[in-house]
Image (cartoon, rainbow over all chains, first blue to last red; front, side):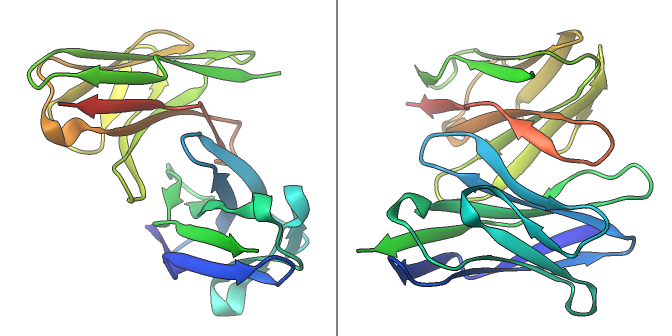
Length: 114
Length: 112
C-alpha cells in the first residue's frame, strides 16, 4: 500500500523567495510520483511527474522536484516565487506493480506575500 | 487531444433532493474514470472508479452511487442528498499505465 505525507498544510513565502513544498511517501513497491496544482474553484493540473530515469524532474511554471529514494521524499521547489503561484499543491504516489490506485496527500496551500 | 467535461459547474440543492452530475471525456477510448470529492479545506477523497462500461468500484460507503453507461461517460448520483454531501466534485481520467490522472473543472455542490 502507498501513502503520502505533505509536511505543512500552509506555507507562506515572499514574492521572489524560494518555494519548498515537502512530500514524503511510503510504498512497498517502486513508486511513480506526481505533483498537482489546484487554483481556486478549478480542477487539479499536473505539474510534473517522476516515473523512471532522471531523479530531478522539471515541470511547468518553473517548478521542479527531486526523487530521493533513500529519504522517501519528492519535494517540490521553485527558485523564485511569483504571485501567480498561490494555489493548493498536492503530492501523489502510485505503486508500479499490481492493481494500484493514485494516492494523494492532504495538500499544501501556498500563499505568496508581496 | 483529450478533454474532460463536467456539468453543471455549480449546483445548489435542498436536502433530500436527487443529484446527477455528469462527466464526459473526449479524445480517448476505454479510460479509467474516477470521482473525487473535496470538502471545504480538505484533501481529495476518492469516491468511485471505473475500468469499463458498467464496472464501478466504490471506495467509501455513503448515499452516493455512480454509473458508467457509455465508455466515456461517468455519472454520479444520489436519491436523497444530505448536508454532508456538499463539496467540490472532481472527475478524472487516467492516462495509460503510468497512473497519472487528468481532472475536469469540477462541480461545486451546495446542499441547503
